[in-house]
Structure formats: C-alpha cells, structure tokens
Image (cartoon, rainbow, N blue to C red; front, side, top):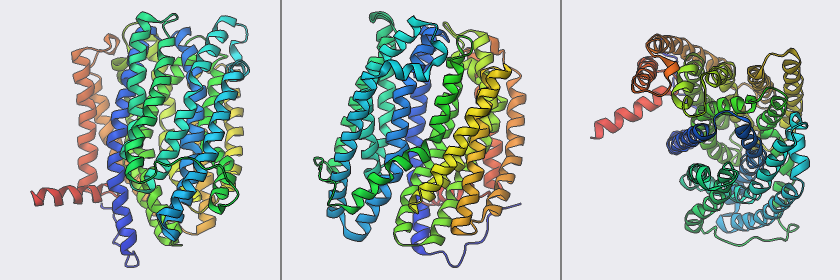
Length: 538
C-alpha cells in the first residue's frame, strides 16, 4: 500500500540537498509558527473573555483587518516572493556585495512606499473604514470608533513592511528564526494590551490597538541581530536608476502584491459583506478564520516558504526538473498535514471552539455560529496550501502576469458568490463557504496554467498520494469524533472537556501518523527515515 516511488536516477545531488533543506527549514518554521499560533489563540482567548462576540469586538476586528491586510499585502504578499528571487539570483551570479547593494536600493524603495501607505491610511482612515465596513453606515458611533482604532494602528504598517523586507533577505541566507519570531512578539504585545486596556484605557478596546503599535516596533528590533550577523545592517539607498535588479523588483511589486494577495482581498470583501449581517457576524468570521490560520500558517505556508529558497536557487541555475521535484515535495508535505487537519476541524469544530472560547462574554450561541463557520471553511485549507506552493513556482520563474489574471477571476467569483449568499440570507457561514470555493477555483486555475508553462508536474502521483492520505485521515478523524461524543461541550472549558478533546485529537494523530509511517506515505517516509537515523545514532 506504499505510495512512495523509487528515487529518480536523474535526481541531482544538489536537488536532493535542497529537498533536505526544505524539511529542515520547514521544521524550524513549523515549530516557531506553532508557538506564534498558540500565542494568537491565547490573544483571542483574552479578547473574547473580556469583550465576547459583540459590537465592540466587531469594531476592533474590522479596524485590525485594515492594517493587517496591508501587512499581508506588502510584507508577506509581495516583498518575499518578489525580492527574494532577485536577491538570491544576485548572490549566486555576483556574490554577497552586489546582493547587498541590491538590498539597499530595494530598502529605499520599500521605505518610501510604506511611509506613504501609512500616511495615507492615517489621513484617509474615515473613507477607508467606510469602504471596508459599508454595513455600518447607519451606526455613526461604531464607525467613529473603528476609524479611531484604524488611525492608531495604521502606522504599524511601517514596522510590518520593514520586517517583511528583512524576512525576504534573511530567508535567502537560510535565516528563518528571527522573522518567525515576529508574530510571537506581536501576539504577546497584544495580549498585554488587552489585559492592561481592560482596566486602564477608555474605551478598553484601545489597549489592544496600543499593543499592535508597540508590538510592531519590537518586531523590527528583533530582526537587528540576524541582519547584523549577515552584514545587512546597512542604510537605504534612494538612487533607483543604476540597478537593473532593483528596477525588476519595483516593476514586479504591484503584480506580485496582487498575485499572492487574492486570499486576503477575498477576506476583506467577505468581511465587508459580513458588516451587513447581524451583530457579532464579523467576530464569528474572524474567530473561525483564526482557527483556519492556525493550521494554514503553521504547516502549509511554513512548508511553502521553506521550499521557496530552494526553488529560487534552482531557478537561478535553470534547473526546471529540480523545481518540479521541489514542488512535488512541498505539495506532499503540505497535504500530509492539511488533509487530516481539514477533516479534523470540520468534525471537531464545536468541541474546539467551546473549549477555547466558551467563557466570559462568549455565549453558547456564539460557539454554534463560530463552529458552523469553521466547518464550512475547513475544506478550503487544502486548496490554500496548493495556491501558496504553486504561486511561488510562478514567482521563481518571474511570471507574475499569470497570477494577476487568475487573481482577477478569483476575486470576481468570490464577490459574486458572497453577494449571492448575503442576498439569500444564508448567514455568515455562507461567506466562509464562499472563501473555500474561491480558494478551490484559484488552486485549479494555477495548477492548469503552471502545467502548460513547465510541462508535466507529476500531478497524478501527487493526487494518488493525497487520496491515500484522505482515506487514512477519514479513519483517524472518525475515531476522534467518536471520542468527542463523551464531552459536554455546553460546559466549555472544563478539566473533563479538555481531557476528552485532547484524547480525541491524540487518537486521530496516533492512527493517522502511525498509518502514514507504516504505509510510507509520501512526506511521512522521509520524516520517519530521519527519526530512525537519529535514534540509531543515539
């Protein structure tokens, strides 16, 4: 029943080494991102405890969405996939000194761009909030508070942009720790702001906004030791004409921003539609999205990010077959986790939400609505992982136009279907389903188009492996669901419920993980071999 193919004799030693780097670097990213996501859950735990799923939390989540989307667009959506390939190409072709000069020029361009974005965001906070939360037009107090919080938090875009640029160049040096620590720092700062604000600030929700601003500054400071170690602690240069690579980065900035930002744009559109629904809808959507991000960020994005460095090295050497092997490897690793995670979240949505959030001002009705959102959004996890990995192959090949065209189609599909859900009165969970459908459309389109560009990717083998993982996941998650029936989830966070939920998840992990190793499913086989080698050395 093994689905692991024999090693290809054409595989180069450099590609094999690169695939090993993916596992190693992804392990670092997964570990630190897991800590970050746990800190994020604690942050959301504290926010729901003090404020519940109310109009006040709707205000904060909407205000936080705006600068947070700018962070995803500028820092994660554009800088890393656009800057990193050019920077690595310069290192491979000309050495570190030339690459450093490229970085200085890009630093100058990015600094100007993010300062302009921050100033515009502060000055035009009112119109921006109205565009994002059109459903609150008849609630002036709500709009005013959202505008105030947005003005406080928008300057943090500067810090986020600087951290995104640092991540792009540090990852090229196989430095992943400092950038991965950034969201942990932000979450700790927001937790502190939540607690302090609840007792000191007026309105109390303002404390979280302060936490965002302070966290942004601390994130930048955390990058400095790694930047100094790699001789990148240099000033910006504002002469943009003399560096062809820097001009390529600047020309690719907007297409790159849009290409990878489709997911975030869709979220913005759907939250705008959610603002037209009943009070609490934005909070339900946000809270369920946080659980999706837990899995998506910890595994799928971490694996794709680790693979991107290797893929850029191979692209710089025109090794197309090596890039395909890296794509398959990252896809197999992402599916190894995203498939069981999607099933597990769908089956255990209510127990998970109850244990994490049923306390303080968060009610059982809030649990039901949030859990329904989680269930309808869960199947999109697999497609998000696919989109990230395939998009980065386009970036490594310096093809940004294709992603823009696909992005336009997907945004239209998302908006039309989301509007239809609102008109049909389906509820906020209909918007979560809409996002999953949009992710599926984007994934399929990108897969078809990259195959036309580079030829056969070995998709049939990848899908066969995914089917085996799905079958095994059904068994594991089915057993977990049976265990979960022993809990009384209306009681929320109790010792018994925590034990039952832990046991349910543990049963699924043992059945799925053990089966994946036993049957040597692709992705699990290499991890199992590494563990066995380490045990033998001991």
